Length: 408
Image (cartoon, rainbow, N blue to C red; front, side):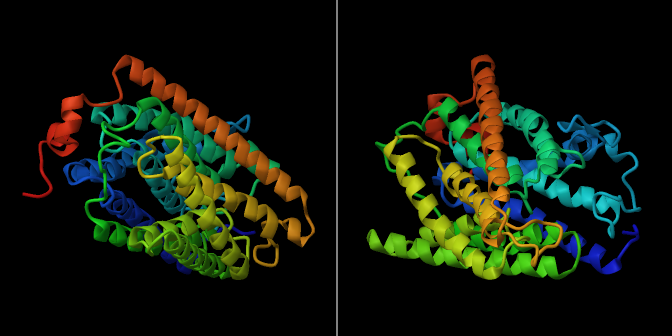
């Protein structure tokens, strides 16, 4: 295929960059409403700081590690340090009809929100200094190599045939299982399971849900890297899965008592996370199944986590890790080349081999992200400490860490 700029594709991905970046403050609102009022500023900061931290790291060396010249299928080379050579001309492997710099910018927005997702595991008790150091190292050792494995030219999982349209492995399974590992190391909040820790502002969480849903159109449909039929299909499947999961979660919570507003919002996000890897490969009807199945999987994963007494505070593992694990499996079941000719057929289209490849991608991502995160968190906990003092936690991180108060 000839490499040339298409103005329509370029305009669409420029819009998608903005939509995906909006998801990070949207996530901040989604998480912020679910914590206690004394920790909302801290929780917001844990998300939005990545717009600055990763905004620098990605340009300096992150993009090069993720998308530089392949080194043994494991990591990118250093040829794009400081975005050297990443300019207005398209790259033959990364968006043939858009500027290479635009592809790098679009991928940066994914790199920004992924570590922000993990913060739901340790809100209300993490030391800000330790969190920043952890985040920078995690982005370098976990996100960038995993991104290369799946999406980089020559990456070994992509070469194996793993299909991940917009981040089932790279974003959601990575964040979910890293969150689980970090929560196991840092331990529960003071009074967890004994004192009430109710969400202080559910309307803020609902607002965050809306911002995430709208932003997700850029996240998934933008991953077509063109204004074409695949992008349209990804938008439709994204909306359908979120709608189905929201309805099913509403029914589940209704059966347990009353239809929870927070539950409906959570279900919608679960549907969005589940369809992410499949969105550009499956039909809207299949997306209906993806969302409907994802809701009970995550709903009962939360129940399981609660019974185990694990304070993975905002259920990143259940809502992102488990949902997108199912989404990767669903890709192996429902994918069809009738939707995307550069994808592959799944089990129900006569190709059972894809399901096996998807399972390899899932297991590798889980093991890599959990293992590296657990080890990194342990080292930081034993050296500089991961959590604030008991008094700082009691006062609240807004005052003790940032010297500010959200509400007078």
